[in-house]
Image 1 (spheres, helix red, strand yellow):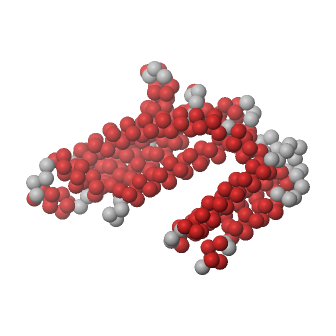
Image 2 (cartoon, helix red, strand yellow):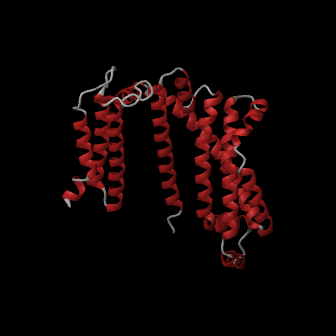
Length: 304
C-alpha cells in the first residue's frame, strides 16, 4: 500500500527533473532555476498530500498522471532551452525565468484575471438568465421547439466575434461590447441544448405530472427542467468554452485590461517571457473554471 502510494512514476520524474538542473547551462541569461524547482516542489507537495488523503485509487491515479505530465513538460522545456539551447532564447525562455516573471507579476496578473472573470460572469449569467427560461418555454411545445432548435443551431454557428464592429458602433464602451460577445457566445448553445433536453423528456413523466394537476410554471421548472438538466449542462459547457475563447480574442482587439490584453500588450513589445506567462495563466484560470463547473454539474446531477 505504501509503495503504490508514494513510489510512482511521477515521483521518479520529479527526481529526474532535479537531476536535470545539475547539467551546465548553455544560455546567456541567468536561468533562475530556483523558481522552476520551487514550482516542481509545489507539484510534488500536492501529489504527496493527495497520496496521504486520497480515498479512491482512481482519484490518486489522476493526480499522479497530471503530475507526471507536468514533470515531463518541465524536463523537456528545460533541456530544450537552458541546457541544450535548441530553441530561440528570446522566444522561448527557460522555465525558471518564466516562473520568476510570474511571481513578480502576481499583483498585475490578479487585476487582469479579475477583469476577465468579471466580464465572463456578467455575459454568461445574462445568457443563462435569458436562454434557460426561453428554452423551456419554446421546447415545451414539440412543434415550436423542433423548429426553434434548428434556428438556434443556425444562428449559433455564426461566430459572435463578427458582431464586434456593430457592438463598437452601437454600445457606449468596449466593456459592454465584450459582455455582448460573451452573451451571444453562451446564449445560443444553452438555448439549443435546453430545447433539446425538454424535447427528450419522457412523455410519461409529463403525463404523470398532469394527472397530479401540476401548474405550468411548476411543470417547467420542477418537473421538466430537472429531467432536462443533463442536456442543458452540455450546452452550458459549450457556451463556457466559447466564451473564454472569445473573451481573450475580444480583449486582444481593444481592451485595456484582462488576460487577452496582457498577452497582446507584451507580445507587441517583444516581451515573450511575459507572453508565455500570460498563456500559462490563461490555461490555469480556464482549467480551474472548468473544474468548478464540473463539480457544480456533478452536484446537480447527483441523482444520476
